[in-house]
Image (tube, rainbow, N blue to C red; front, side, top):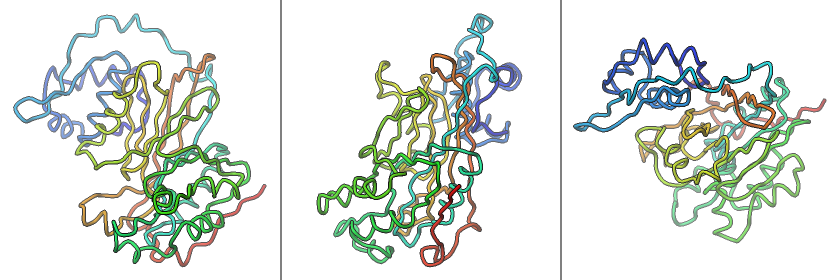
Length: 335
């Protein structure tokens, strides 16, 4: 049982009435349903989205999921229009490519863009850490894990090697690795890349709102470490937003994790990386998930999201290409 897509109303009703006890530990429910603890958190968000109120609380050092009230008025919930009556569009989402690192996996990025091309997806979002950057004295050993150094070499590499697919525009933000070039020499790498790549649109550092077909989507690349539960980072981000400033969807990079939830009526995605685990991450015991998303978004006539179908495409360890930085060629697709 997986919950990285939108549940239907009937599925939510079945889970709430048949599978969910009045109160039990998150771990017990995960084991009973054959899903992960993270997916239980995601499930709780989806159930609340449909009006089936549940909560997860800490009791005696154990996380408990419980029904917090009986659902008496679900039949009065406004009926959604059918998918056929909605406007549909699809966006592709990637993040954390860390190009110019010897851990880069350019062939995975190429695979993502080939998929976007085949699916006729014209809008792609990149959620930061486009390049590996240069931390100088802060990470002295990093220089040995890169094959391109400095802003000039790294921007030239992206301009030359980032997939060029006719009909696809990539909007991107900078992450902390990209920003290292500004710290070192005042160079905003995104602006340099945008000047020479008309298909790549630089938005801003760390976060940006883009509007696609009337839907505001926030790209974000936060800092800090990784929570034990993937849902927490998205929850904390959405909790910090005022009601009048919330996007309808948020896509978050940085964590090299993959996760989908709905919280406070915001659809949230943690976007995996497209590089393999670095020595720095390994030393810090930080796991690395590789992959990308494409997301079908169905809206009503007012631009409100009615349905969303995120598709998670993950790569496995066996998909890692050794010396990708030496062997993978650029991808160029023209009609």
